[in-house]
Length: 608
Ligand code: M6R
Image (cartoon, rainbow, N blue to C red):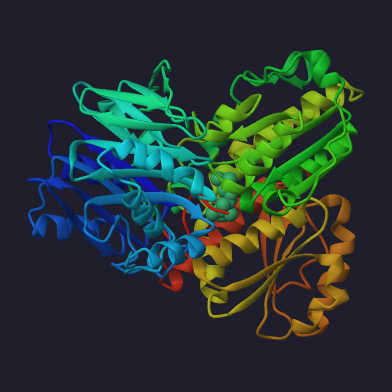
């Protein structure tokens, strides 16, 4: 988490830097700060809260800087406070430093530095880096940085300014993205190239352990031994996306309503009707390699993990390929067996999730092949994977992932179809899947058109503080995802559970104050779900059912029913999830939560 933005150039460095930083707010928004050099001194401004708070303070102070570095924070070490906000300084304020990542050995370093006279003012791990570099400084800032980095354990992207070197920023990266943006007589640095916008024509990504000195009209790159490196800049792909809220009150609502379009886009020119299969540009594995895949391992976190569950069921069922799914943060601490002919699918909207990236790197080190399913072009995952299928969902700004989820399921269904058709699936079966996929945009529109019904249900249920989301088979990941949406944006305790598992303990929680949102759009398990509804009803649990149009036998069991358009079991998660997204949105609205930027969260989880 956390975003870094820096600028060296002729324009108002404070304005340019804060504007860039605002585009990184998705990476954290509990505090922010900016520092730079003015008249030979380090000057700074830090505030708790969103970047706009820091911006107005900087304006109030009439802050002017020649070069600037800034950071928007998601607290790891030390609560959100002005003193813990970045930048951090050494004792004499000779340098200011911003950092993304975690310094794991910060306690030992802090102790050693204190013994040498450092006085720490914050609770952060970052402050030790500022003191460490300062302690190694003898007039050569580059050397001081290079000598300090090998001592650090953990991961980092850092940017710093030093008062004796007033026209430059020094940056370094280890397992964290950092890019240099080259403009016209000006140079930028950022954790995400999308924040550069049209002012940058070319970019360079810092590689592992690399250090760079950034000046107005040039930058110099070094490897960890200080040997100069020359790297070709890449032309920056300009993304001319509309990222305004338009007529919507929140990005989250806008993104929920964008789904008919994002699904069409995910499907566009990827359906090969003539052969009942999919054609996937960007899938640059040879046919022979795809045919030789004997196992699949899926890695992801959060919502992407839930899309992965859907895919794991489909890949086994339709393509008959044994598929294992692992939570990235758990997987990376195993000593995994990756048998030959295993294809690894890493799913991530942002492509920057630290745990997924770490798991991918571990697999690459073992020689595994990675297919990324990703939304953000040029992200770390997209660059590091052997092949990448993009979601084409457009920018997802709301922290709560909505349209990315339905696009992930769609792209993964297409991939499964391709793998299944390359094996034994008939053209007829393949065509059925394609037909179901193609109907989805209109079916989702039908759900969206009835948003007022869902809003009324949300109002009715919004006073409850505990919920179960229950489903079987494809509706189990839908239950996990529905519960995650509700907890994330409305701060309500919601448990996604496989309905059959309730009687093994959780059913003890069911009472009149604990509603169950029961998901019945999976035809193969419909009858079993009815029995589970009986069990909940017998214990006075309120029931809101989401079922396919035409489903029978529910009326006497459920207190409320919302019918979604009927589709095949494999794709039923999509209309159901859209209904659940709206439900979570309207409950959160009823409860007055900060929907686009919920407390304690960040859009991109770039720390472990
Ligand atoms: O960018 P990613 O898909 O890798 O992010 C993974 C999770 O952090 C993310 O899906 C998170 O769970 C969402 N905010 C949930 O809405």
